[in-house]
Length: 296
Image (cartoon, helix red, strand yellow):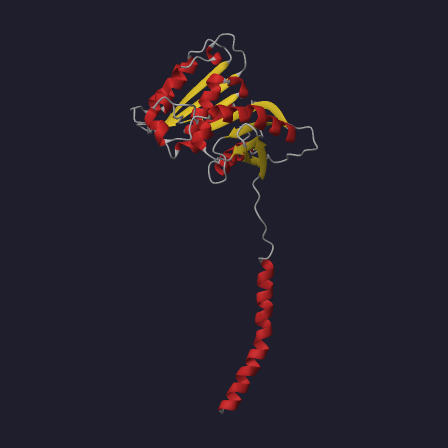
C-alpha cells in the first residue's frame, strides 16, 4: 500500500468513525446536563435603625412549610448565623431531629443572623482597660439586643408563620450575649442554648448581676441549656477557666426562686472550644425538646 492509499484509508476510517464518536459524546453530555442548585434556605435583608445598617439573615424553612396553610412553627434564632459560620450545620441538626422516624424536635424555622462585627454586637462595656484598647469597637450589645427584640423578631413574625415559642443559640461571645439577654431580658426567648459562654468578659461581672429570672414572681416558662467542653483558661489577661465560669452560671440560675425556670448543665470533656458547638446543640435539642410519648 502506497502513501496515498494509506492516507485515503485513514481518511475514510475517520469519516466513518467520527459520527459515532459525536453521537456518543452528545448522549453522554445529555445525561449530565440536568444539574441545578441545591437550595438549603433563603436570604433576607433587614434595615436596622437600632444598628444603623443593613443586616443579612439566612432563613431555613422546615419541610412542608407553606404560607397558605394554617400551620405555624417555633423559631430558632442563631447567632453567628452566616453560611460560613454555624448556619449550615445547625440547620442540619434541626432537620435530622425533624425526620419522621426520629421526631425529637418540632419542625422549626431557623433564623441565622450573619455577623458584621461580633465583638461590637455581643459584648457590653468593659471596665478592663487592656480590653478597651485591644478591642476598640466593643461594648454595644444593648443596641444589638434592641435590634433583636424591637426589629428582628417582629420582622420574622410578620413575614413567616410563627408561634410564640422562641429559642436562641449562642456560642463563645454569642454565648455571652445569650447570657446577657437571659439575665437582663429573659422574656425575649423561651429557650436558651448557651455554649461555652465568654463569661470572662469584664472579669465575669455578668455573674454578679441581679436578674428577674431569679425572683419567685418570675412566671414565664424558661428552659436553659449550658454546655462547655474541656477548654481551660480564657483569653482575658485575668486568669479564669471556661468550664468553671460556665458551671458558676448554671449554679446561679439553679438558685432561682422561680418554679418556672429549668436549667441543664452539660460538660463535654471530649470537645474543646473549637469543636463543642455541634455536639452541645445536639444534646440541647434533645433535652429542651423531650421525646413525644409513644403508645405501648
